[in-house]
Image 1 (cartoon, rainbow, N blue to C red):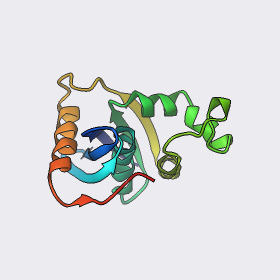
Image 2: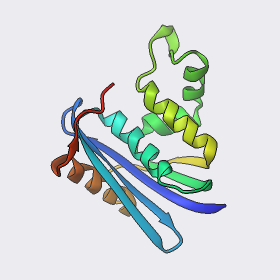
Image 3: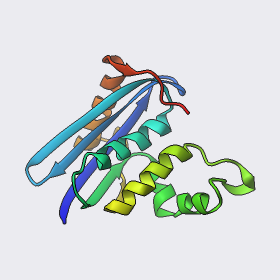
Length: 152
């Protein structure tokens, strides 16, 4: 299997508000960047969307090292919270709905196609790929076309 490094970031101007995601994919000497802006979304949705779009861009099953500055996502996967939410009909403790379940469902389906490992990186700490993803995400907010709406 190909070994891919997937760096991601999401951004939002207001929360909710206009937002965007940025992705840097690396395979050997190849680098691919993705980004898109949305007129109305949240930061967590953009963080999830970045990972989803990165995984969707892969044409075959791969070993994917995912790097994100979102503790929300990395902890939900690595501490297995998302699997508990899924098994509990997308309810968290005290029967509160799990937020962004539509995107979590997409992400879990994509994870079934790839071998994934999630790694947390500190945001805005000089990590080159994380900084590039942040730039892509924040630039996507300002550059048309903004997709109309992401909030479900």
